[in-house]
Image 1 (cartoon, rainbow, N blue to C red):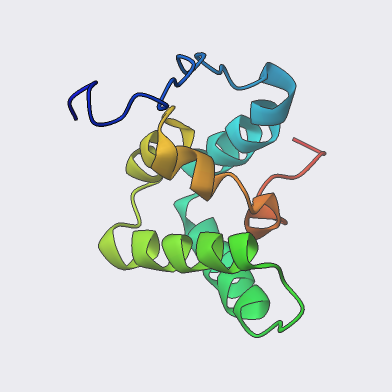
Image 2 (cartoon, rainbow, N blue to C red):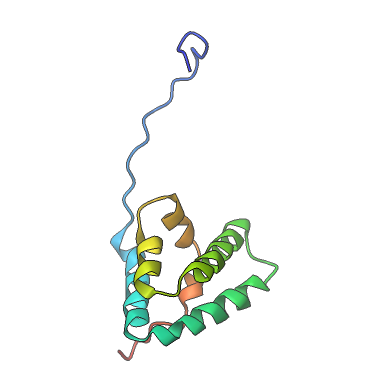
Amino acid sequence: MNQAYYPVRNRRPQRERKPKAENLSYFEQAFVCLKEDPDRVAILRANVNHYQQKKHLPKAAKAAITRFEYLLAVTENPEEMERRVMEDSYEGRKFRQMPLLLKGISTNSE
């Protein structure tokens, strides 16, 4: 893109956005419980199936459900799942748009 052809295209530099710690604590707690008991992946699968049948969800939530479905098809290793969901990238942010998929994995009694 030569400057002569696009004289109006004056974009501000993108600022670096850091995820807030309070938003990530729920995901961290869920993945700690998932590492302790890998059988809880079945709960994650059940949540994906449950929310996949809902028709009232917004487009971003449906996309997050589809991404989790693909992730579960690739791996059931909790460490690998945590790495992909918690990474600071486009994919990681899209995974974190639907925290209800991790509902029931972490318990407050632990």
